[in-house]
Length: 112
Length: 117
Image (cartoon, rainbow over all chains, first blue to last red; front, side):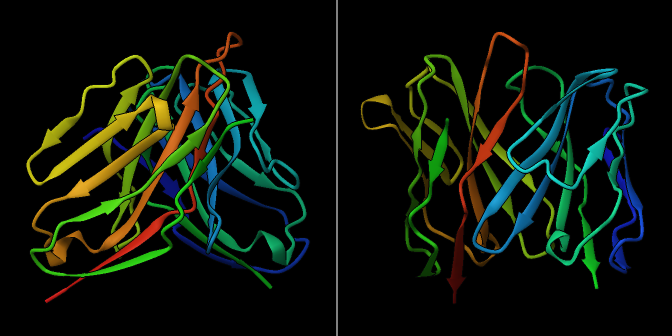
């Protein structure tokens, strides 16, 4: 089944403790992205990647890192999480520039 | 910079009513794509439609229809004979096609649709 898989689905952590949210897709898509969803703000793009080793900032990249060492994986790294990063996070992949995005199930992160 | 505005924060209708969700966008690009996604209470994001900037034909898919008007920079979504299962948050989104190969996607803030019996 074609899908984007994020893990974990839920995470509660403490301020400053490094964490990684994993994202994997099995559709051989070139493009992958991370978004955060906050009430009243919709979804905002954090980072995106056009291919292996090629990444670029979205609209809200501060406090996040990404890597794309393999085509299928695009982890989101929070080196020192803060409470303002409490949010619902979505990973997505797309077969082409401007193509439809296939979203993961979401990761609800709480930073206390 | 590109921007998507969904001015309707929340809409409530009674089942079987028609409802239109508005989407207004801003972009300086001539080539772009517009999207609608649905987010039901379970939280996943469901793709509904993609439309490129050169195709202004309206589209109908069952009870769903979309009206794209470049002259007013709008891409409105109508649900005919709404049903309770249509209750969800609906997002309009815009992506540009830049020469660098980027894939920046901008979402509106969403419209919460509640369909009641």
